[in-house]
Image 1: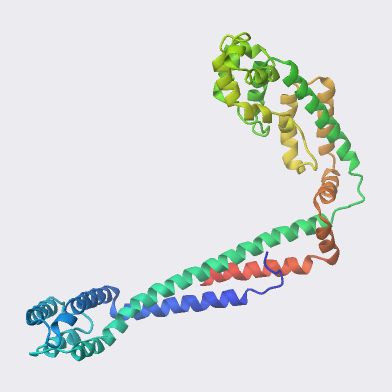
Image 2 (image 1 turned 120 degrees about the vertical axis):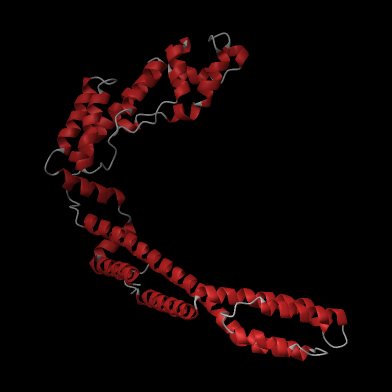
Length: 373
């Protein structure tokens, strides 16, 4: 995380300079017109190709046919140029430069020197591309640092909130009913898995999963169809999982469709092994009241399908506790007690207010820079 006290001035200045550089580079290109500069670059590239092709063979006492071919190609090349091309007169001057009975390396050096200004003009395109790249990187750096500060703000706000918790609050008044219910519903589900037909267990899970706040994974379609239609579906889940480990020849003595059972149950073993009562529990520390109230309303309807009155009564006791006025005070104390590390407790004791304000200000400055530049 960034230092909460570190000012973002450097990144903002980098972004400001990068935008100014991009604007200057764009203005320099616009002064000549981008299309004309691109045409000039293409012309220079073609001329460089001619130089590379002929310079060695057409100079000194080289190949006379190469010399003639070079002169022809240069004339054709210049005649095809648009007169609106920047530095056109320089290109045209090359006709006189190369109109000699014999060419030397110095002639080609002279030609390149005459074209220096043209190459400088074309360089504006590269400068603009580089300026745009630097600007994009500067924006990315500012955005990433702003996000880092936003994360730091969230962390410090959490510490500030938990630091205000009443650590002497009687959290056992909240923990006891929740632990009583959670253990009771776990036991009820363990009994369901161990004793009820597999089709009944998975029918319950499918029904529970239809409630948006009861977080069971949907039953795999092939598994649901198998336990619904086959005799083996009357066996408990534990028995089906044991069958899935049998060889087909041994399993043939126990079920009517041994290979299908191994394929479907064995293929869904991970799902079945993970199937537990956790989606029916409240957990510790509990969720905020506004969130938990709605979930508990759904759990009352779901849990009553598999548990006895004592379990449902324990769930009602939790629901009543969540509706009490002091629930959030006790919950905040529970979260603080459960989640705060020793280092975080020391940070809270030292005070987080200044760091929080600095992180907020840094994020605010960076976001404003992104809008401004």
